[in-house]
Amino acid sequence: MTPEITVLDRLLEVSELFQKDVARAFDGTPLTTARVRVLWDLVAAGPSTQHALAERLEVSARNITGLVDALEAGGYVTRTPHPTDRRAIIVSLAASARQMMQQMQADHAALSADLLGAVAPADRDALVRGIEAIAGRLRELVAAEGEASPRP
Image (cartoon, rainbow, N blue to C red; front, side, top):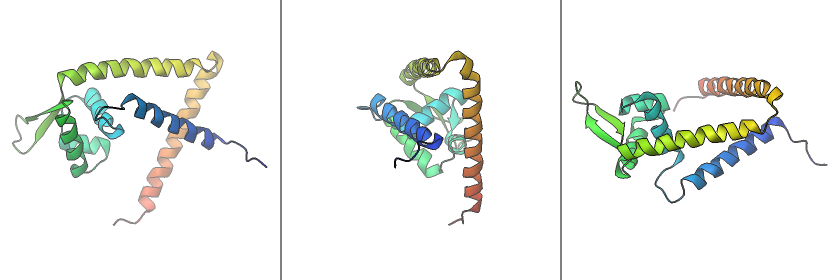
């Protein structure tokens, strides 16, 4: 007997397809999903200290340093001294990365529209509400699990 395909099965399939699409899009570049997250954050928040980036992305200081090091080596970001805190460094998008991120934003919007276009117009609001509800519940479960897990 073949097991019934569940909503979770479909969500996992969508997640895997997105991962494959991202891997294809950045094949041959030094970009990874984690590095692109940094670039998206810089687009949204603007130039930031590494500390602020680490907090927003919920990664360690060591992790953000490695990500920014790689992005700087690839010419995607620049580091400059903080104007008032000599211990802090400001991370900004490089000019070439700004152009790339504008294209990435356009591609993102086009893919979003294309995917939503696969859903009947009458069903779109319900789909969005359902996805928001599922994402909200999963955030709650992940947060609760994090609180229940022992700290090292």
